[in-house]
Image 1 (cartoon, rainbow, N blue to C red):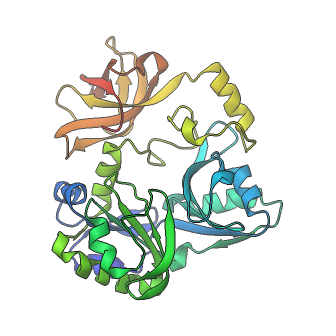
Image 2 (cartoon, helix red, strand yellow):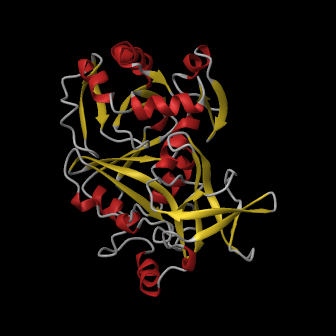
Length: 357
């Protein structure tokens, strides 16, 4: 198993460690509910250094990005970020990712940990322009500092004005006395905050500085389990659960990052799918009876006929009720539709609701 620059620290802090995407990662410290509440109400720190980072550089860097991603990266300006996906040309998704425009000829792509090699190989095969590609994943540490007090907790560590940073923008500067750190107004929790990219050599110094500065704000380390409950409450897709090589961005509610006004891999097929209409759709639902929906549980109608399946589910710490996401036949995708989750052969009532939960 791979480790991050902070793995030994997590172990010393008493984190429960689990294998995740080939890495030894902290799943929880004090407990999922307590960590979830810390992020929603104060500020918490995730080590997400397992994520992948690629640098694409050269005259035709944008051409390559435009070809392999669904969103329109030509709209980016320096210091802006875009959520996008890599369509697989068969109405499926290779991965979802973030595209950072550093300058006109330099971009950073941030990809999911489990897909680093897969994404690299996929993008490289379409690199007809010989764009310079560099995989900096193994030397880059990434901390996500999330929660309503994140800006206040971090401001003393940098001269970047954090409060004025727009969502999905980034700045490169000095952070905790270290040069060339990328501070990004992004995150996967819906609670606001920042993601900090630094060289592995500086990871511990950044972590220590963040915790010292954040102490008056009740800052705590947070594991991957709370990251999952937080993102699910927001209705954010998780690759491998809610989206994968068999799900189209249109089915997944990601039409907003699928710009069919441009040509990209699989765009003709997606145009066709949009014209014909999707036959299933990713929806959010809340349980009306006791029971926790789990990944791959069948979704059925009143007669017990399978109409789809659960992709993500949990007991929501904020809402104190069980929630889930899943694909259902289009007839059941409307808000308010009653559906059933098959839990141990029992039909358990649920209702389709609008996301975020």
